[in-house]
Length: 207
Image (tube, rainbow, N blue to C red; front, side, top):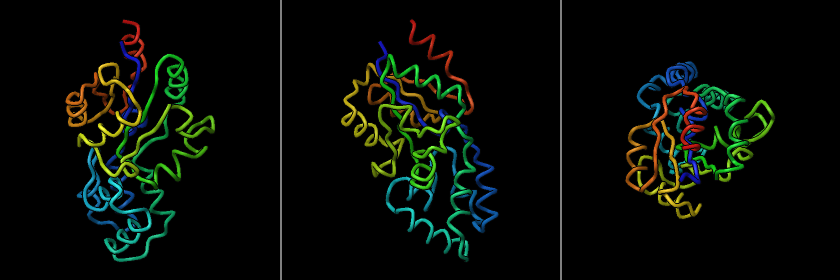
């Protein structure tokens, strides 16, 4: 029986647009953006900010060095925002109903520019509610100092939340992340970027 559901953010809760983000970062001067930005696992300073090895200020400083010029913070924030679409209202409303019968969590490789300046604000949803209103707890890599698909981030989430892996469904769009989730004992579902997973969850939870 499924008692807990763990959602990835990018590719599950919100659609990911890698090529659009690459284009935006190139526009502000990051010519090698395609080498650094990945749909599942960034590289270089883009990975460093998600793993918590550097903070927002250091990321922006290093990005300016990478570009060879000063880049306004607002431009960097807008470039990061371009990697995703806002969440669909129907999915968010579904999550509110889901919380009545299941514990729900986010486990996401992410960064403070997207999360602290957008997801945790009223700009996140059409209803003016932050991401924290839709989940029992959120787990972000930059705060946990480790990233998926490494097993450490899963272990930390399990220990903190108290979930029993066998009673927990993990939903992610990365096969590597799914493999680690299976390793720690989660039930899993591999999501296609942009998929409407509500009917699948209804069927699974009713069986």
